[in-house]
Every structure is written in C-alpha cells, then in structure tokens.
Length: 185
Image (cartoon, rainbow, N blue to C red; front, top):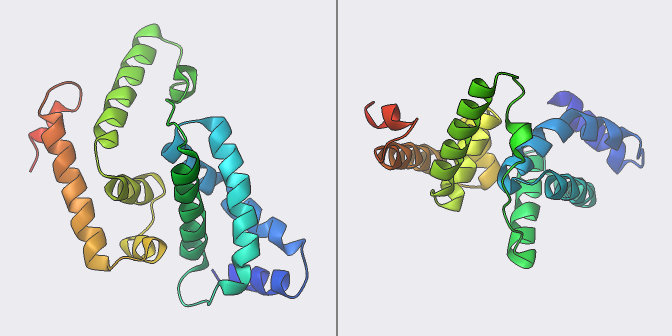
C-alpha cells in the first residue's frame, strides 16, 4: 500500500514510467473483475485499457484517505458501469472452453453445467449485489475495501451481501447442482 502511494507520487511528479508498476500490480485482478462483469474477454480487455487511462487521468484526485486499491477499483468499476449504460454492452457468456481445463469429458461437462448454473443464479441478483459478491469472493476484498470501492457504508455491504446470499439460496431451491445451498442456514 505504501509502495502504491510512492508510485502515485512519482507519476504525479512527472515520472510516467512509474505508472507501469501500478498497471502491472493490478492488471490481472482488475481484468478478472471486469471479465466477470462483462463475461466477454475482448470487451473486458478493452474496458481494462480504458479504465487504466481513466485512472491515470484522475490520479491527481486520489486523496490518500483510503487504500489506493479501493480507489482504483472504484474508478475502474464506475468507468465500466458508465460504459454499460452508454453502450448497452451485451453480456456474453464466457466461451465454454475457457471455463474448464481438465480433459475428461465427464468432468468437463459437469464443470460447465455447474458454472452455467452458478452464473444464472448470480445473474438474477440486482447489479449492486452481484458486484459485492464479485468483489468479496472473486477478488477477496475485505468489507472495508468494498465499502470504500462502492462508497457505501460498511453496514450496507454486510446487509447487501447477506441479502445476496439469501437470494442465491432461495433461487437454488429450484433444484440443480446448487440445491444444497438452499438446505444450509
């Protein structure tokens, strides 16, 4: 975290090469987040590049009040959401061959089905709840980091995450691979 602030200071002082460190530190995590939001590798790559440009342009607005990671995620996610609204980007399923890497046909089929079903369950959630689940479980952000990223209170993060899990359990009661979720408290 302190390294990030040092690199931000270097970039703001005119050292454009220092921005390479910031990109390298966050590009994989951020790409994974955007890919889960778009479900399209090419769109995710385009939005990732645009998001890093946006972050660079807004770097002077970072006030060092919260973690740099949370601020970066907030700028990037807001950019993506703006683009979704502007361009009405269609969410496309990830190509099936990218979902699994094992070779057994049975394992491949079962993993694809589980992945599809989980995506369908999560897709039924409201946008903010989907995003909170993604940030918490896919990106392993803390509640505090999610709060900073989305600019909502810690209580809202907890409540929305709880509601999202409850809705997933309710949706899972319809049967299928995730039926066991509905049987847990």
